[in-house]
Figure 1 (cartoon, rainbow, N blue to C red):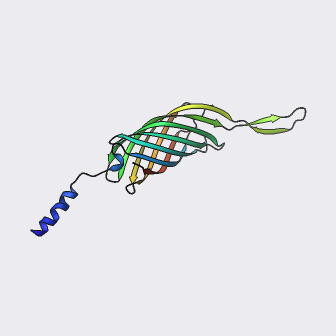
Figure 2: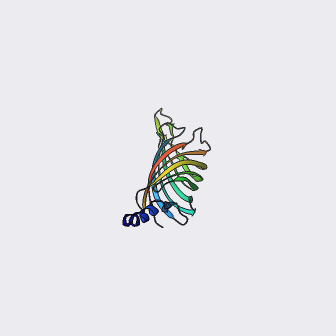
Figure 3: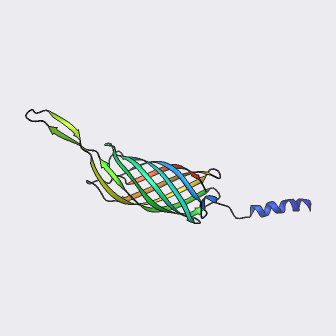
Length: 185
């Protein structure tokens, strides 16, 4: 009888609802990600993404994200920011799988070299001629988040950016990011 009295609370605890504190309404996270990817340009891209997100409902978050990207062998650059929404549709006590969609807007620069011939001589030299432009893009992605402890978590994200092509190439097509985050509230 004593054994049953001792095991009954443990049995009730084992059947209780799993708490997922990083997915509850009111939670706030900040973090940073580092990614690599490929687009229409040879050489791919590398991206740094600081972010902050707030859970407006359980499993549903709004996210503000900045982006600094270097693209291709000419080290074209992108600097921008965006607003995303994430929905965590599968979760356990430590692991969550989510989808995201959003919009980014920023400024890019495409590095180009041009031939400059000096007259009256026929000396040829190359000059850098960067083209600057502003553009927006739609972002969709699928990711996973793993809670390391009550405050820290790791995430991975595979995403696709849908934007207009500039000079015949899309600067930032597909990307895979690894990140670390911290729950502040």
